[in-house]
Structures are given as C-alpha cells and as structure tokens.
Image (cartoon, rainbow, N blue to C red; front, top):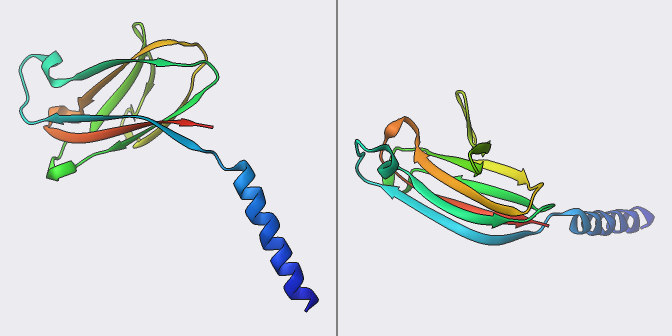
Length: 130
C-alpha cells in the first residue's frame, strides 16, 4: 500500500514538473510557398516577406516539404538587412526545425527558395516559444 501511494505521489510530482517547465508554443504565422515552374530569373523562384521580431523572444520555424508530391525542399533564410542570421541549410545538412533567439527588436526579412532549383510545395510554421 505504501509503495502504491509513493508511485502515485511520484507521478503527480513528475506531471506538475513537466507542466511547469514545458514551453508553450504560440502560433504566429504560416507561410505557404508553391513553385510549379522554375524561371530563368532567380527572384521569380523565391518568396520574400518582412516580419517584426522582438528582442528576448524565441521563435521556432518548422518546415514541411513534399506537399502534393513535389520534390523540392524549401531553404529558408532569415536576414537582418543584408546579414544572414539563420538558415536551415548548412553545407550538406538540412534542418526542418529551427529555433532563433532574437537579440534586437526590428524588422527581419524571410527569404524562401527551393534547394537544387526544383519545383516544390512547402509550408513554414512560425511559432513563439514561451
């Protein structure tokens, strides 16, 4: 009996501990980018948007590729003016989830293109972690 009470108490403490320290995700925006045909003009193969990010906030970018059987993988770049701050492709490594801790409130550019100049259909979810 004492062992059962200990197990129940332990599980209750563990559940509370996980609830307190779990990060909440607040959905901010979803970017959909579909490219059916590759153009000879590079900027026609890209998606570009500007977004305000706040100092001290942590943002997560989750990339979902291969929608509707398109083969392209979206490459996302986060830019501050002309400076590359974050990308999901580093040499041969490709990441589908990225986190970014903003150290300056301001407007940031998000540039999306497809790896190896293939047609693609992707979604990027942007969430704020708290």
